[in-house]
Image (tube, rainbow, N blue to C red; front, side, top):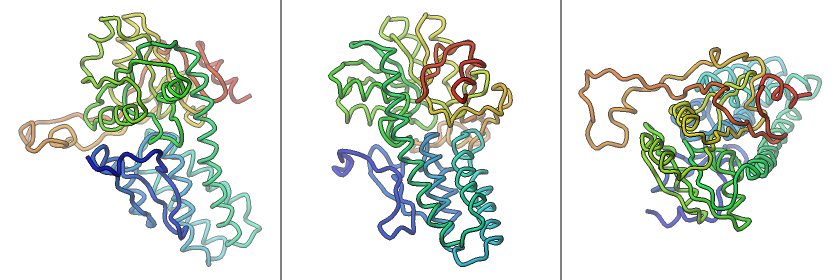
Amino acid sequence: MDETVKEASFENIRLSEDGRSVVIIDQTQLPNRLVRLALNTPRQCYDAIYALKVRGAPAIGIFAGYAMYVLSLPYAGLPYGEFAAKLHETAEYLDSSRPTAVNLSWGLRRMEKVVTDHKSLPVPEIVALLKKECVAIQREDAGQCAKISAYGLTLVHDGDGILTHCNAGPLATSRYGTSIGPILLGRERGMQFRVFADETRPLLQGARLTSYELQRAGVDVTLICDDMASIVMKNGWVDACFVGSDRIAANGDVANKIGTSGVAILAGYYGIPFYVLAPTSTVDRACPTGDRIKIELRDPDEIKKKFYREPMALPETKCYNPAFDVTDHTLVSAIVTERGICRAPYGESLAKLFQ
């Protein structure tokens, strides 16, 4: 493993030194290599999202802000009407890369609003405001993650066993993370947890990213295959489940990485609290239930070939590869946001967050 991976902290999304590219850590290269990519074309930014080089709902929202600023630079000399049209076209293109995560469209809309709210200004001044806005999105996320982490920490005790699924740590956000945040914050405060990290097939975000982040932070983490979650729960080793979310419906249904709903069902059977940790930007008030959430389907080769030297199934074998599933709100013990902890009935408690 490269020694460069042992850096003390991540700047997973930032502007390049000349301010004309957005620089990301290519998460597909972890944990063995720390590779940074400088992106400054619509195709590069689209590919970074689709190929999961940048991933995690909050991180995608942050990336959307930086991408919109960088991609606005070549159009800074255009009249306002043409400039706004180009930016809208760019936003629509980027938004088509991954349909399930609401933070992507949220970040793009927020940047477009800067353009439409300042149409009376010269275009170069609007571009300058776009730069301020993308930085503000990232700073706000850092503050939100700190608050989510603090609220989440009140739900567990020193010495607890915690099961995680997928990755919602610093790589997927800006600081601390959402579902991993309470664990890292607790560690800073001298608390000890025993974490079981689902590997999260087929793309292994739990193995490649979550176990990596926790190991580096000095947390007691044990990597398990997804189908081992039941036995560690049955053994009495798990006191709580922490997961993130890519979209939360108004009724509390939760879209998250494929396999999340299975963890929730198991937790319900064994009487283990199942907590969802996410910023309020992940709550889609326009989406009444999880039935309305579009689930992204990905390349079957991610199941048959990814991470294998040789294919693990015949070429003609059919595969079903949804990237996400929806956990019914009745299986969720609480939804933790930067504005507080919501409990059932979620239609009421989530709505109060925005009053």
